Amino acid sequence: MSDNGRRRQLFAIGFLGFVALGMPVAALGVAWARMQRSFEVSLEALGLVMFALLLGRVLTSVCSGNLVNRLGVGNYLLAGCLLMLSGLVGVAVAPGLVSLIALHALLGVGVTVLNTGINIHAAGNYSGGRMNLLHTGFGLGSALGPLIVTLVVFHFDLDWRWSYIVYFVPQLGLTLLVARTRAFWK
Image (cartoon, rainbow, N blue to C red; front, top):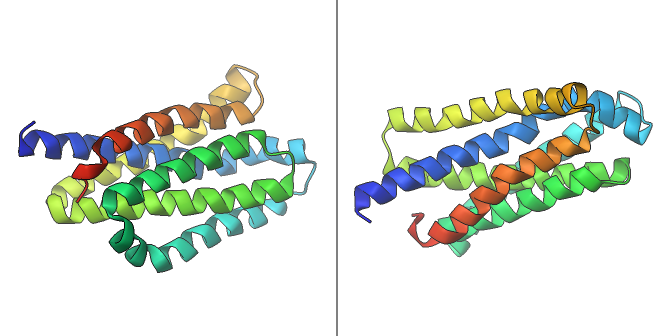
């Protein structure tokens, strides 16, 4: 494959990455009404879940530079994909609030690893306009995430947990693509 073909391929994978990480992050607010009932907790417990997500993101941001230097961008992205997969499955099967909180911290780490890795690659390989286009993937994912919860819960009358299984599908595709191309992420 030519260098331009490889750059386009990695750009498309990065775009999918932003879509995949935007969906579960934006869906939490919509899913919470059903999650709250499942776990029989107060509305305020959402703050604990969101704090865990934030904590995972902040702690990962602090050490991401060292991790990228040690692992390389491709391996760093693959680690983020695997963390996201684990977090999504975990949230889908979480038995209680404590596990839900811990799993959102894990999702926060995965989201930040993917975000950082894709941005590092993009900053060194694409123009500002292409970077902006790449980031529209997050906006698309943020729009799709709540829509998926709404369809799953209200249209198909399924438990909210199925939304996280739906988010798992593009994340699995992303993971396979990153694993296949990880040597090319610079």
